[in-house]
Length: 211
Image (tube, rainbow, N blue to C red; front, side, top):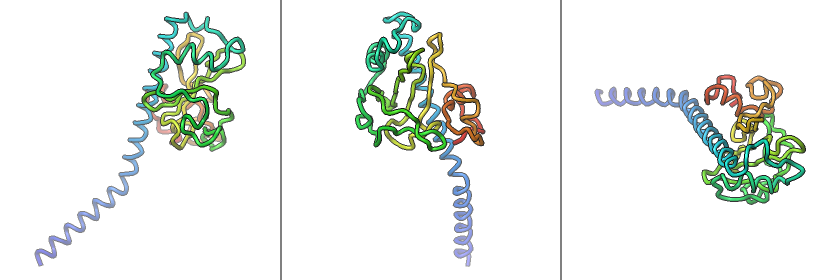
């Protein structure tokens, strides 16, 4: 009887532990994933910021750098960025970077990010994908697309895809893609300002973040 009673208590205890684990484990995993994402985002931000400073030592202030159409995207990246990044692979097409299509990136609402894969982009030594975008007029690197896990899914804005920008003082900052584009309940669900939202929240994912 005592053995049976002890066994029943053990089974009840294990059952309680199982229920508690089932309720709390998803939250623990989610919080871990968020922290990993923030750490990777902060690292690539630091990497890009340091690359700019090193490039300005060799090439002069950012305001004097050549702009489109006087220089192509490939030439611009090769001159002003490539020597100052720790690059594992130069990607000339989407297959080189491990992507399955020529338009692999998606906004938060699952619509395609409307730009074809660039002629030149990079995978850094830590596995981060970096695309220095060339625009028609203005800054040649007004937008910098990063994918924290390169060709792996979900390739979704605000999860592993983030956008940085360059201001007139050459400082790297989170792109401003609309005030509500990275709010959980927003109908304007593109997510292009998610890096900015995290940075402005002291490098933490806020409660209204659409995770």
